[in-house]
Image (cartoon, rainbow, N blue to C red):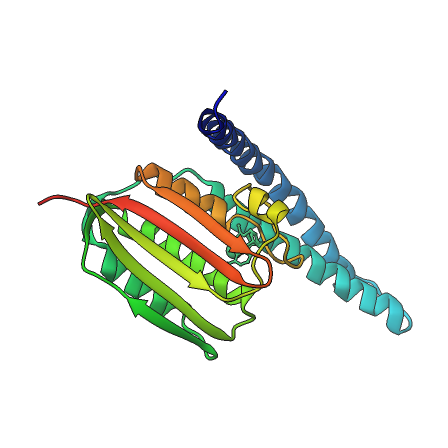
Length: 231
Ligand SMILES: Nc1ncnc2c1ncn2[C@@H]1O[C@H](COP(=O)(O)OP(=O)(O)O)[C@@H](O)[C@H]1O
Ligand SMILES: [Mg+2]
């Protein structure tokens, strides 16, 4: 078996695996939301009715409420992200979509170097913007909100390629292998680990590709390739 055939098969297998896990996550989180709702009510009831002596029991009760609230946010995000949504595609300019994503993710400490080109695509603009918001958010996280993010748009034949390049922490081989998996995250408890999964799914739903190159300690380049709409 040639290396090329093996890579293709593995990619297809991963896509199937990811779809199954996303489906499971969506079903499981419905149930979990009910359980968390119950726990949240109990925590609230205790906080209102229990007369606890001393600092520690009161601090514990407060912690319980905030942990339940944390879990609730996490599950809600997960549910929103895994919910299968119908795409509403229309002709649009990828340059506008990327400009909007950059505007939404702007923060002090991060400078953008933008090399954008006008390029018509046939896409769900809102969901495509989310793709770039998710990718840029990861770059910001990896650079600890300090440094330059470069966004290059290149046109090759019938394809528009957008590169998002950061000089952040980068990924080791193991992280790179898993970073598209649902709920994979190397970040703190609050992270959901769905940003790249969703980005990849949306790009695939537009018949495009998302590829990632990364080196630990050096940085990351994410490339999104989409078909140009011929008018
Ligand atoms: N630009 C990047 N630089 C370094 N690591 C990254 C980058 N983008 C993604 N990753 C890695 O991939 C993981 C998954 O990313 P994502 O799906 O967006 O989930 P989350 O951001 O919630 O952790 C991250 O936790 C991180 O380890
Ligand atoms: Mg993310």
